[in-house]
Amino acid sequence: MTRTVTVDRLGASASRRRMMLLLVVIGFAGLAGIFALRTPGGPTLQSAPRGFVLNEVQSPVPDVQFTDHEGRPRALADFRGKVLVLNVWATWCLPCRKEMPTLDRLQAALGGRGFEVVALSIDRQGAEAVKGFYSEVGVRHLSVRIDTTGKALSDLAVVGLPTTILIDAERRELGRLMGPAEWDGPEMDAFLKKIVERKAEVLASPENKENSL
View: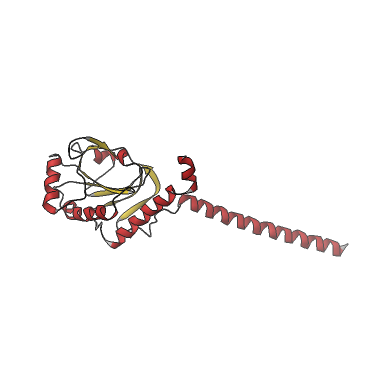
């Protein structure tokens, strides 16, 4: 009888250990799943260039309104499906003037179907002020976009110039950088290329192909 009780206890103890081990494994798997859902291959703080503050949660960006070089109405919704570098600037802002040629080179290097630099000026003098500045410094690849009302500042919660907002293809803010930057530098180039490539991978996934049929 004693031996039977001992064996039963050992068996029960072993069963409990196996159950605890299983629960631990399930717990780790659950945490890994949650982590994967929170960061589905997205950019990380470690990969962001200096000064870039990335959001843990991507929030929708307001559909900011502005005009083009001919005064025609435009909006951020026009660029849906593209990763955007939205730079809010003005010709009277010295740091903005300094970084604008690097944004022009960034647009020349990465601009296309999946990416665009949207340089949004808040100059009250309108398109002519921007055209003159672009001609002065040799900007050739950036389009003229103007918000003479300055409403974009409040819509985007911009507190200083320049401010650059990184927006994904679904018009959600990934993060922002306050102040000037070298937009054509190797670190920034590699960071933005990863985001554009990841967007292309998502669009090419079987789930998205099925949804597009």
